Length: 319
Ligand code: NAD
Ligand code: UDP
Image (tube, rainbow, N blue to C red; front, side, top):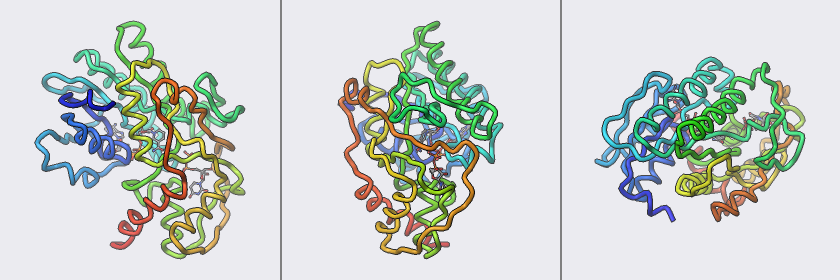
Protein backbone atom coordinates (compact mmCIF):
# COMPACT_ATOMS: atom_id res chain seq x y z
CA UNK A 1 0.00 0.00 0.00
CA UNK A 2 2.87 2.38 0.77
CA UNK A 3 4.68 1.46 -2.45
CA UNK A 4 3.26 4.59 -4.09
CA UNK A 5 5.71 6.57 -1.93
CA UNK A 6 8.73 5.11 -3.74
CA UNK A 7 10.71 7.76 -5.59
CA UNK A 8 8.79 10.67 -4.09
CA UNK A 9 10.61 13.61 -2.51
CA UNK A 10 9.17 14.02 0.98
CA UNK A 11 9.98 17.01 3.19
CA UNK A 12 9.62 16.17 6.90
CA UNK A 13 9.38 19.15 9.28
CA UNK A 14 10.27 18.30 12.88
CA UNK A 15 12.26 15.33 11.57
CA UNK A 16 14.71 15.04 14.48
CA UNK A 17 11.97 14.40 17.04
CA UNK A 18 10.45 11.16 18.24
CA UNK A 19 7.84 10.66 15.49
CA UNK A 20 9.82 12.54 12.83
CA UNK A 21 12.84 10.25 13.12
CA UNK A 22 10.66 7.13 12.79
CA UNK A 23 8.89 8.68 9.80
CA UNK A 24 12.14 9.47 8.00
CA UNK A 25 13.43 5.98 8.51
CA UNK A 26 10.19 4.35 7.31
CA UNK A 27 9.97 6.67 4.30
CA UNK A 28 13.49 5.74 3.20
CA UNK A 29 12.51 2.11 3.77
CA UNK A 30 9.67 2.38 1.25
CA UNK A 31 11.90 4.06 -1.33
CA UNK A 32 11.22 7.77 -0.84
CA UNK A 33 13.82 10.57 -0.84
CA UNK A 34 13.70 12.63 2.36
CA UNK A 35 14.66 16.19 3.21
CA UNK A 36 14.56 16.49 7.01
CA UNK A 37 14.18 19.93 8.59
CA UNK A 38 14.44 20.71 12.31
CA UNK A 39 15.67 23.48 14.61
CA UNK A 40 16.41 20.93 17.40
CA UNK A 41 14.38 22.80 20.05
CA UNK A 42 13.12 19.47 21.42
CA UNK A 43 14.68 17.09 18.89
CA UNK A 44 18.19 15.75 18.44
CA UNK A 45 20.22 15.10 15.28
CA UNK A 46 21.44 11.89 16.96
CA UNK A 47 17.96 10.45 16.35
CA UNK A 48 18.78 10.55 12.63
CA UNK A 49 22.40 9.35 12.88
CA UNK A 50 21.61 5.96 11.34
CA UNK A 51 20.20 7.64 8.21
CA UNK A 52 23.06 10.07 7.56
CA UNK A 53 24.97 7.81 5.17
CA UNK A 54 21.97 7.37 2.85
CA UNK A 55 22.35 9.53 -0.26
CA UNK A 56 18.55 9.90 -0.46
CA UNK A 57 18.55 11.63 2.93
CA UNK A 58 19.47 15.23 3.82
CA UNK A 59 19.16 17.03 7.17
CA UNK A 60 18.85 20.81 7.37
CA UNK A 61 18.86 22.86 10.59
CA UNK A 62 16.14 25.48 10.21
CA UNK A 63 13.28 27.12 12.10
CA UNK A 64 10.11 26.48 10.11
CA UNK A 65 8.46 29.65 11.40
CA UNK A 66 10.76 31.47 8.94
CA UNK A 67 10.20 31.51 5.17
CA UNK A 68 10.71 27.96 3.94
CA UNK A 69 12.57 27.20 0.74
CA UNK A 70 13.39 23.74 -0.59
CA UNK A 71 15.06 23.45 -4.00
CA UNK A 72 13.53 21.38 -6.80
CA UNK A 73 10.44 19.25 -6.92
CA UNK A 74 8.70 18.36 -3.65
CA UNK A 75 5.94 15.75 -3.64
CA UNK A 76 4.90 15.71 0.03
CA UNK A 77 5.27 18.05 3.00
CA UNK A 78 4.79 16.42 6.42
CA UNK A 79 4.45 18.98 9.22
CA UNK A 80 5.51 17.39 12.51
CA UNK A 81 7.39 20.38 13.93
CA UNK A 82 6.10 21.34 17.38
CA UNK A 83 6.95 20.71 20.99
CA UNK A 84 4.63 17.82 21.90
CA UNK A 85 5.18 17.00 25.56
CA UNK A 86 3.16 19.12 28.02
CA UNK A 87 6.42 19.89 29.87
CA UNK A 88 7.98 21.11 26.60
CA UNK A 89 5.12 23.30 25.51
CA UNK A 90 4.79 24.80 28.98
CA UNK A 91 8.49 25.64 28.80
CA UNK A 92 8.23 26.98 25.21
CA UNK A 93 4.71 28.51 25.05
CA UNK A 94 5.44 31.19 22.47
CA UNK A 95 7.50 28.87 20.24
CA UNK A 96 4.63 26.37 20.42
CA UNK A 97 2.08 28.96 19.31
CA UNK A 98 4.44 30.20 16.60
CA UNK A 99 5.23 26.80 15.10
CA UNK A 100 1.54 25.83 15.10
CA UNK A 101 0.50 29.10 13.43
CA UNK A 102 3.40 30.73 11.53
CA UNK A 103 5.12 27.38 10.98
CA UNK A 104 1.97 25.80 9.60
CA UNK A 105 1.51 28.82 7.32
CA UNK A 106 5.05 28.45 5.94
CA UNK A 107 4.65 24.69 5.55
CA UNK A 108 1.38 25.12 3.65
CA UNK A 109 2.99 27.87 1.54
CA UNK A 110 5.81 25.48 0.61
CA UNK A 111 3.32 22.73 -0.29
CA UNK A 112 1.30 25.14 -2.41
CA UNK A 113 4.37 26.51 -4.23
CA UNK A 114 5.42 22.95 -5.08
CA UNK A 115 1.89 21.57 -5.73
CA UNK A 116 2.75 18.99 -3.08
CA UNK A 117 0.52 16.90 -0.85
CA UNK A 118 0.43 18.17 2.75
CA UNK A 119 -0.01 16.27 6.01
CA UNK A 120 -0.54 18.04 9.34
CA UNK A 121 0.33 16.23 12.57
CA UNK A 122 -2.58 17.33 14.72
CA UNK A 123 -3.44 15.83 18.06
CA UNK A 124 -6.05 14.41 20.40
CA UNK A 125 -5.44 17.59 22.42
CA UNK A 126 -7.82 19.39 20.03
CA UNK A 127 -10.53 17.58 22.05
CA UNK A 128 -9.18 19.19 25.26
CA UNK A 129 -10.69 17.67 28.43
CA UNK A 130 -13.35 15.77 26.49
CA UNK A 131 -16.97 15.52 27.60
CA UNK A 132 -17.56 12.49 25.35
CA UNK A 133 -15.55 9.29 25.47
CA UNK A 134 -14.35 7.84 23.13
CA UNK A 135 -13.80 10.86 20.89
CA UNK A 136 -14.98 10.70 17.27
CA UNK A 137 -13.62 13.23 14.74
CA UNK A 138 -17.04 14.94 14.76
CA UNK A 139 -16.57 16.01 18.41
CA UNK A 140 -15.63 19.71 18.65
CA UNK A 141 -13.78 19.43 21.92
CA UNK A 142 -13.64 21.12 25.31
CA UNK A 143 -10.55 23.33 25.34
CA UNK A 144 -9.61 26.10 27.76
CA UNK A 145 -8.05 28.63 25.34
CA UNK A 146 -6.33 30.68 28.05
CA UNK A 147 -5.02 27.90 30.29
CA UNK A 148 -1.37 26.79 30.12
CA UNK A 149 -2.21 23.89 27.75
CA UNK A 150 -4.11 26.27 25.48
CA UNK A 151 -0.87 27.25 23.70
CA UNK A 152 -0.64 23.77 22.21
CA UNK A 153 -4.32 22.95 21.83
CA UNK A 154 -5.25 26.24 20.18
CA UNK A 155 -2.16 26.25 17.96
CA UNK A 156 -3.18 22.83 16.64
CA UNK A 157 -6.81 23.86 16.25
CA UNK A 158 -5.66 26.92 14.29
CA UNK A 159 -3.33 24.69 12.24
CA UNK A 160 -6.26 22.42 11.32
CA UNK A 161 -8.38 25.44 10.33
CA UNK A 162 -5.55 26.89 8.20
CA UNK A 163 -4.91 23.53 6.55
CA UNK A 164 -8.56 23.20 5.53
CA UNK A 165 -8.62 26.85 4.39
CA UNK A 166 -5.71 26.07 2.01
CA UNK A 167 -7.67 23.09 0.77
CA UNK A 168 -10.86 25.09 0.21
CA UNK A 169 -9.31 28.25 -1.21
CA UNK A 170 -6.29 26.85 -3.10
CA UNK A 171 -7.45 23.28 -3.68
CA UNK A 172 -4.35 22.01 -1.85
CA UNK A 173 -4.35 18.24 -1.31
CA UNK A 174 -4.29 17.94 2.49
CA UNK A 175 -4.43 15.30 5.23
CA UNK A 176 -4.84 15.82 8.99
CA UNK A 177 -3.95 13.18 11.55
CA UNK A 178 -5.29 13.50 15.06
CA UNK A 179 -2.58 11.51 16.72
CA UNK A 180 -3.27 10.09 20.20
CA UNK A 181 -0.56 9.42 22.82
CA UNK A 182 2.21 7.46 21.14
CA UNK A 183 5.29 5.87 22.72
CA UNK A 184 8.32 3.79 21.82
CA UNK A 185 12.06 3.99 21.17
CA UNK A 186 13.52 7.45 20.40
CA UNK A 187 11.42 9.22 23.04
CA UNK A 188 13.61 11.53 25.10
CA UNK A 189 14.15 10.25 28.64
CA UNK A 190 13.56 13.72 30.04
CA UNK A 191 10.75 14.90 27.77
CA UNK A 192 8.33 14.87 30.69
CA UNK A 193 5.64 12.60 29.24
CA UNK A 194 4.31 9.78 31.40
CA UNK A 195 5.92 6.89 29.51
CA UNK A 196 9.54 8.16 29.66
CA UNK A 197 9.09 9.49 33.20
CA UNK A 198 7.74 6.12 34.40
CA UNK A 199 10.42 4.07 32.61
CA UNK A 200 13.18 6.30 33.98
CA UNK A 201 11.85 6.02 37.53
CA UNK A 202 11.31 2.25 37.40
CA UNK A 203 14.77 1.66 35.93
CA UNK A 204 16.35 3.84 38.63
CA UNK A 205 14.34 2.09 41.35
CA UNK A 206 12.52 5.29 42.29
CA UNK A 207 8.76 5.70 42.82
CA UNK A 208 6.95 6.52 39.57
CA UNK A 209 5.67 10.14 39.62
CA UNK A 210 1.87 9.96 39.19
CA UNK A 211 0.11 13.31 38.71
CA UNK A 212 -3.26 13.60 40.44
CA UNK A 213 -4.80 10.38 41.78
CA UNK A 214 -3.88 8.40 38.66
CA UNK A 215 -7.51 7.67 37.75
CA UNK A 216 -7.27 9.77 34.56
CA UNK A 217 -7.08 7.67 31.41
CA UNK A 218 -5.03 7.62 28.22
CA UNK A 219 -4.95 5.25 25.26
CA UNK A 220 -1.41 4.54 24.16
CA UNK A 221 -0.30 3.63 20.66
CA UNK A 222 2.99 1.89 19.88
CA UNK A 223 5.08 3.96 17.47
CA UNK A 224 5.22 1.40 14.63
CA UNK A 225 1.42 1.30 14.54
CA UNK A 226 1.28 5.10 14.57
CA UNK A 227 3.72 5.47 11.67
CA UNK A 228 1.82 2.88 9.60
CA UNK A 229 -1.44 4.75 10.25
CA UNK A 230 0.11 8.11 9.37
CA UNK A 231 1.57 6.89 6.08
CA UNK A 232 -1.65 5.12 5.14
CA UNK A 233 -3.44 8.41 5.76
CA UNK A 234 -0.90 10.23 3.57
CA UNK A 235 -1.44 7.89 0.61
CA UNK A 236 -5.23 7.78 1.08
CA UNK A 237 -7.47 10.32 -0.57
CA UNK A 238 -9.27 11.30 2.66
CA UNK A 239 -9.35 15.04 3.34
CA UNK A 240 -10.27 15.92 6.92
CA UNK A 241 -9.10 14.85 10.35
CA UNK A 242 -8.61 11.16 11.14
CA UNK A 243 -7.93 9.81 14.63
CA UNK A 244 -4.75 7.70 14.66
CA UNK A 245 -4.37 5.89 17.96
CA UNK A 246 -4.89 2.71 19.90
CA UNK A 247 -8.30 2.51 21.64
CA UNK A 248 -6.94 0.37 24.53
CA UNK A 249 -7.74 2.79 27.39
CA UNK A 250 -5.93 2.53 30.74
CA UNK A 251 -5.73 4.65 33.88
CA UNK A 252 -2.38 6.26 34.61
CA UNK A 253 -2.07 3.99 37.65
CA UNK A 254 -2.55 0.97 35.36
CA UNK A 255 0.10 2.39 33.04
CA UNK A 256 2.48 2.76 36.00
CA UNK A 257 1.87 -0.88 36.93
CA UNK A 258 2.39 -2.07 33.34
CA UNK A 259 5.69 -0.19 33.07
CA UNK A 260 6.94 -1.64 36.35
CA UNK A 261 6.04 -5.10 35.00
CA UNK A 262 7.88 -4.40 31.72
CA UNK A 263 10.99 -3.29 33.61
CA UNK A 264 10.70 -6.13 36.14
CA UNK A 265 11.09 -3.73 39.06
CA UNK A 266 8.33 -2.43 41.34
CA UNK A 267 9.37 0.66 43.32
CA UNK A 268 5.72 1.82 43.57
CA UNK A 269 4.31 5.28 42.86
CA UNK A 270 4.50 8.75 44.41
CA UNK A 271 1.57 11.14 43.96
CA UNK A 272 2.10 14.74 42.78
CA UNK A 273 -0.38 17.58 42.10
CA UNK A 274 -2.42 17.29 38.93
CA UNK A 275 -1.40 19.73 36.15
CA UNK A 276 -3.93 22.44 35.21
CA UNK A 277 -6.56 21.23 32.72
CA UNK A 278 -5.13 17.69 32.59
CA UNK A 279 -7.69 15.74 30.52
CA UNK A 280 -9.55 13.20 32.67
CA UNK A 281 -10.23 10.72 29.88
CA UNK A 282 -8.91 10.13 26.39
CA UNK A 283 -9.68 7.37 23.94
CA UNK A 284 -9.89 7.50 20.15
CA UNK A 285 -12.91 6.35 18.22
CA UNK A 286 -11.01 4.74 15.34
CA UNK A 287 -14.02 3.75 13.22
CA UNK A 288 -13.08 6.28 10.52
CA UNK A 289 -9.45 5.10 10.31
CA UNK A 290 -10.63 1.51 10.00
CA UNK A 291 -13.06 2.48 7.23
CA UNK A 292 -10.95 4.83 5.11
CA UNK A 293 -7.42 3.54 5.81
CA UNK A 294 -8.11 -0.12 6.53
CA UNK A 295 -5.92 0.45 9.57
CA UNK A 296 -6.13 -0.24 13.27
CA UNK A 297 -3.44 -0.56 15.92
CA UNK A 298 -2.14 -4.11 16.33
CA UNK A 299 0.41 -3.85 19.15
CA UNK A 300 -1.12 -4.06 22.63
CA UNK A 301 0.25 -2.15 25.61
CA UNK A 302 2.12 -5.07 27.20
CA UNK A 303 3.84 -5.93 23.91
CA UNK A 304 4.62 -2.28 23.08
CA UNK A 305 6.14 -1.59 26.50
CA UNK A 306 8.31 -4.69 26.25
CA UNK A 307 9.56 -3.47 22.84
CA UNK A 308 10.40 -0.10 24.43
CA UNK A 309 12.19 -1.01 27.64
CA UNK A 310 15.61 -1.63 26.05
CA UNK A 311 15.64 1.86 24.55
CA UNK A 312 15.26 3.49 27.98
CA UNK A 313 17.71 1.03 29.53
CA UNK A 314 20.34 2.09 26.96
CA UNK A 315 19.56 5.78 27.40
CA UNK A 316 20.02 5.56 31.16
CA UNK A 317 23.13 3.37 30.98
CA UNK A 318 25.33 6.32 30.05
CA UNK A 319 23.99 8.66 32.76
P1 NAD B 1 9.17 15.87 19.52
O1 NAD B 1 9.29 17.02 20.44
O2 NAD B 1 10.00 14.66 19.78
O3 NAD B 1 9.45 16.32 18.03
C1 NAD B 1 9.10 17.59 17.53
C2 NAD B 1 10.22 18.07 16.63
O4 NAD B 1 9.87 19.35 16.07
C3 NAD B 1 11.53 18.26 17.39
O5 NAD B 1 12.59 17.61 16.72
C4 NAD B 1 11.71 19.78 17.41
O6 NAD B 1 13.05 20.17 17.48
C5 NAD B 1 11.01 20.18 16.10
N1 NAD B 1 10.58 21.58 16.08
C6 NAD B 1 9.81 22.23 16.98
N2 NAD B 1 9.65 23.52 16.61
C7 NAD B 1 10.34 23.67 15.45
C8 NAD B 1 10.55 24.78 14.57
N3 NAD B 1 10.05 26.00 14.82
N4 NAD B 1 11.31 24.59 13.44
C9 NAD B 1 11.84 23.37 13.17
N5 NAD B 1 11.67 22.29 13.97
C10 NAD B 1 10.92 22.45 15.10
O7 NAD B 1 7.62 15.48 19.47
P2 NAD B 1 6.91 14.23 18.79
O8 NAD B 1 6.30 13.42 19.86
O9 NAD B 1 7.81 13.60 17.82
O10 NAD B 1 5.72 14.96 18.04
C11 NAD B 1 5.84 15.28 16.66
C12 NAD B 1 4.54 15.90 16.16
O11 NAD B 1 3.46 14.99 16.36
C13 NAD B 1 4.17 17.20 16.87
O12 NAD B 1 3.64 18.10 15.93
C14 NAD B 1 3.10 16.77 17.85
O13 NAD B 1 2.21 17.81 18.12
C15 NAD B 1 2.44 15.62 17.11
N6 NAD B 1 1.83 14.68 18.06
C16 NAD B 1 2.60 13.79 18.75
C17 NAD B 1 2.00 12.93 19.66
C18 NAD B 1 2.79 11.91 20.42
O14 NAD B 1 2.21 11.16 21.22
N7 NAD B 1 4.09 11.77 20.23
C19 NAD B 1 0.62 12.99 19.87
C20 NAD B 1 -0.12 13.93 19.16
C21 NAD B 1 0.49 14.76 18.24
N1 UDP C 1 1.67 12.12 34.05
C1 UDP C 1 2.09 11.57 35.24
N2 UDP C 1 3.43 11.61 35.55
C2 UDP C 1 4.35 12.15 34.72
C3 UDP C 1 3.92 12.68 33.48
C4 UDP C 1 2.57 12.65 33.19
O1 UDP C 1 1.28 11.06 36.03
O2 UDP C 1 5.55 12.16 35.07
C5 UDP C 1 0.24 12.07 33.73
C6 UDP C 1 -0.33 13.37 33.15
O3 UDP C 1 -0.79 14.22 34.17
C7 UDP C 1 -1.45 12.84 32.28
C8 UDP C 1 -0.94 11.49 31.79
O4 UDP C 1 0.08 11.10 32.71
O5 UDP C 1 -2.61 12.63 33.05
C9 UDP C 1 -0.34 11.51 30.40
O6 UDP C 1 0.58 12.56 30.37
P1 UDP C 1 1.56 12.80 29.13
O7 UDP C 1 2.39 14.00 29.46
O8 UDP C 1 2.25 11.55 28.81
O9 UDP C 1 0.60 13.09 27.90
P2 UDP C 1 -0.71 14.01 27.71
O10 UDP C 1 -1.07 14.68 29.00
O11 UDP C 1 -0.32 14.96 26.65
O12 UDP C 1 -1.74 13.04 27.33
